[in-house]
Length: 300
Image 1 (tube, rainbow, N blue to C red):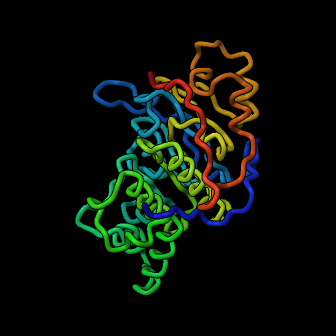
Image 2 (cartoon, helix red, strand yellow; image 1 turned 45 degrees about the horizontal axis):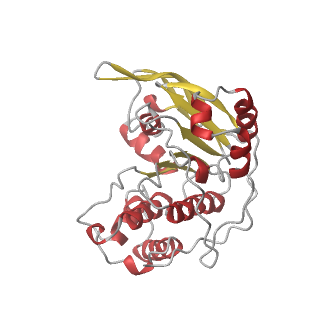
């Protein structure tokens, strides 16, 4: 198995209060119907520069749909989405393509091109830019990013030759190879073992830190591992926001939350939540994080 190298990011010291950076994305009263069913119902939220926003909730309650709205991969039926204050609906096709250059996106189902090598998959976003880098620069950046995610030897391989965990890391490399100022991650550790999941979240944190002011949004059911990197939470239930706030706010909300309620089902009791949000060292190749004891699956 190829060793996974986590970029040096220094000791972990996530801030546990609302980020005060510039508002990069503003979602205003967004609703979405699918086959007559309400998927998003009057959603309003902000994504700020410098923060990692955790988007969680039961399966099928709108998380991935909401994430796809942020770069306008899906258009809302009602409401507005602003990027740096500009309504994405007002952009021409060309302008929207340029605006999307600010985004990196890790898709839930990999979305790798089977007919392309790993190198070409990772290089794809750079080749779509208005002014692409030179071929030499593209190769340099692809090799650098693949080395950072522990896949240097997979450069000439095809997706069909990779395991699920390796495909996730290729997707992560592709999503971040342009050093985007907004990074979106849709269930980045689905189907992975606990150790690999911890490493993936460590990589997400490291990639976030590489770009000053980067705004990151992570959709996941892996609460224990994502809690170590998230600054602020949005909890969706039935297409509506059931909770939003920093980890400190969430810890206080858990004290009064009913034992069988949504927050307790996802985050456990206050003591458990505080333990998984305590600062821990960033995993390195010689320091493998111990798997977090499993909790009941909140999707059930």
